[in-house]
Picture 1 (cartoon, helix red, strand yellow):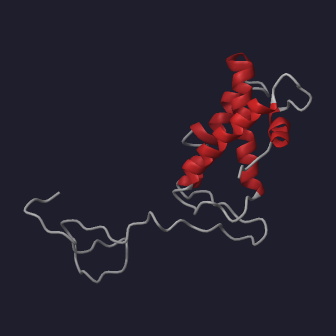
Picture 2 (picture 1 turned 135 degrees about the horizontal axis):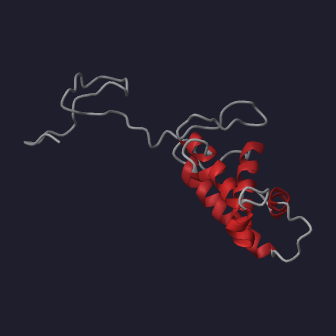
Picture 3 (picture 1 turned 60 degrees about the vertical axis):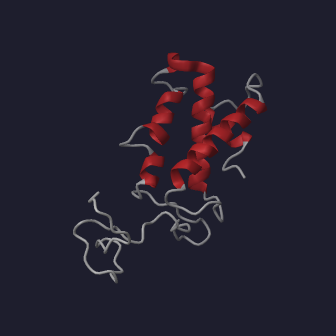
Length: 157
């Protein structure tokens, strides 16, 4: 399931009446946007998502629109409303302002439009323990406190 659609991408890119840009071209950009989004948010949220909030639809639309604008207009549209590179930075590339990086680092949460709560968090990648040379009790349940290593070797790693 895609996060966005052809019409939303055309609106985001400002190319609603442009018949020279094919639906197939836009569909390929939507697939790219979906892959990038899934790669970033899968560290935080369980996929597939139960719903697609409007916030995520807008991110996907803007990301796909950025790819279309880069393909169609290139760098000559720098600092205009057709600057795909600037859009790409705001959503994806820029570590300081990139929305996807902020979602991945948990600075920004994706909230359900229907329940107004955060979407389901992915717990499969969270470590249960962090053994190290300062490990303490094997029964420690707090993941931020190191625990006794499960395997002992003649070397310290």
